[in-house]
Image (cartoon, rainbow, N blue to C red):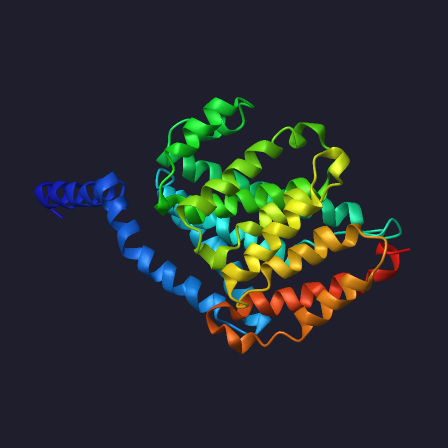
Amino acid sequence: MSMFKYSFFSLGIISIFLLLNSCSLRGFVVKQTAPIIEETQKAILSESEESIARGALEFAIKFSEGLYFYYPKSPYFSGKLALVYAAYAFAFVDGSPYSDFDDRADEQLSRTKGLYKKALGYGFKSMNARIPGFELAVKSKNSLRLAEALKKVKKKDAETLFWLDFAWAMGLFLDLSDVQELAHLEALQKIALRVDEISPKYLGGSILAVLIAYYGGRSDVIGGSRKKSDAFYKQALARSADSLLIADYVYLRFVLTQESSSEKFDSLYKKIQSFNIEKSPSFRFINVFLKRKSSELYAKKEFLFN
């Protein structure tokens, strides 16, 4: 190869390398892959076979993470990672509450919290890319800064903000003894209310499940409110039009387990188990795994109501 051809060849390689690493091309990749990711997400949500959905979700995590590493500045990929990590943790890892006699409880608790923390981290990366300083404002414990940050949130942020808040809430309610995390309870509530304001129909209004747990997962003495929890549960059922079991499961898990009697717990469990997943084909996966999780929770009835 002549020196001219060699130089020309080298220049071509360098040009391709620079092109592949340019922000404009990376932005183009986001636009081209986004429709594929959205359709894959719909396909997973409509899957009734849990083993298939689980495998697809595990692949989606690594695929989305690879795309995120390719273009970390994009809020889109980090937002999707908040979704897939939180969904995976909730569906397949979070087996709380755990019995005091469960030898693997600490290990499972640590693993679950770790996954929720990953989801939360990616959620904040996404929101920081959209709204600079968002995480600092939310965690500042300054109500005014929090309100100002949430004012900047748009409807397009609803999905990321939902999963950010969901992961944060589920991780926090795993361990209510963590004083530092409890300091963020107000932020959890405010974020949930903001999501409900900008996109009340997202995932059938499931953001209300966070508020159900927020008020129903604690006694009135430490800031909870059974009355408010019941009101949000009633609102969630009306919003979802009996198409999703998220509100039912959260109410079963975080509210009815606080009662001394199992009568209402038994009744809601039977309602969940009798739910026909074909009533809502686009949410088959969610309803299938929630029926399974409710069975796992019901199996712990003896230590929950002893």
